[in-house]
Image (cartoon, rainbow, N blue to C red; front, side, top):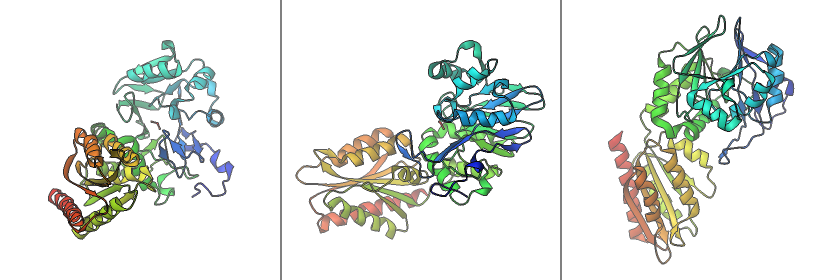
Length: 407
Ligand code: FEO
């Protein structure tokens, strides 16, 4: 498998791949993208998967590509059918990495209609200026008969935008869920079984950042596809699953499975006092037989924090007091924890200060309104003394025992 940094044979990336009879991958691999949402690192790049479905009577393009990759899309489509012959463009999701080429596709295929949910139709108007006469709104359960290929639409709101839907090809049992089940992973290999051990950790990192905040929608989405006899899952990022259970089981575990005996310890230290507390707490948690995963915010990748939040049972956050509040790195990390809405709601806070505290209260103020249960706080003045370290040990033990009580 090629990953970024390898010598790339461009020809292997330019190919159209028939993933099922008359269903073609016509997407693009973005080897060099290194950040998403101006927030999340993409160490392995990503891909924008688009699919062409050719029925006996009608031809459909499912999703498009990120702006800048339109020519690659058209070139691939043209290998199967002239782009102007596209009859329908299905927009499972309106975000520009999949919908950015809609204006060009519709300009080229003058008679094509855009198919989307009712909410999607509105977003296509707002984002891409698609006029009402070029759209067809579909509802949950609606079908589109292409002649020997039947596409069924399944509304899947908030996975992860309000307009999102899945498309299912009934004859071939291929599910096109767009972002759901995706992974940011550029590769010259298109199928899950061709990609090594990197795939599920990257899918988990993706899940944490994109899907985890929408836990109720994830469960509804999983329930919706549970009774389909799916042979293949073709998401909009990363490999296509010829073994759909591989990613479906992973999602079930991340969304509904038991949480791990694991606490995340997220902290920043300026002069070593908070660092000493962090190490003491970590050792106390570990001594109780509970895994502790430390993230020093000076060097941490926030996407790794997000990934580790998926199945952690508790979050312990530490910060020195800076100008009366928490260190900005701790504020940012706490905000990340809050908005990602992990299943773990058990939390503890610690920190140090020079002449007046405030960091732990500031962090508490971020976490408590979001439903986190703060089981303990330790805040010390200056370098931790013996009694401070004993309090830190007690806090670590308390968190570990709370985790053990719950699992
Ligand atoms: Fe991959 Fe929500 O776009």
